[in-house]
Length: 188
Image 1 (tube, one colour):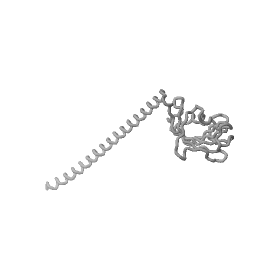
Image 2: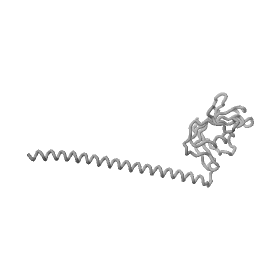
Image 3: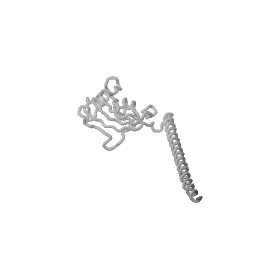
Image 4: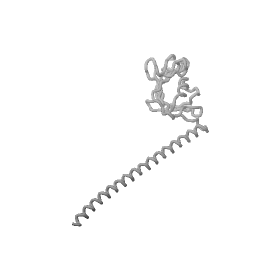
């Protein structure tokens, strides 16, 4: 994995971005620690899928940094942005290790997860400044889009008015030529 990023410095957790998020996408923070992900986990050795949310199109939610998931996920998800899809390769010591491995996963297995970060949100009941800042930013973006749409609509109306005025001038010239021709014929 030549373009993979070594997140732990010891090759224990490698991340390769498959789909980049938009530049202004948010990332998990202390204020937005709850994440929703789609994922598929495979055994590196065999490529066998051992767990996935894709079969039933479900979402897996957890709090980053709380220790509720394997170490590799706590490490890797902090580096991801909403909309990003990454391939995360985890050595056993950053996965389940020998102690808590589920029955269908060998304790010394290297695991590969393809993870999509769907969303980040605050804990329930949290009154956080950054959440209001994010809402304000989104409102500002919405206002900017509405202003751009209004400007575009105004320009469209101006173009239509200009077309109508040009068509009226052409019609007036045609009418003037018709009337001019009739007038000369009657004069003789």
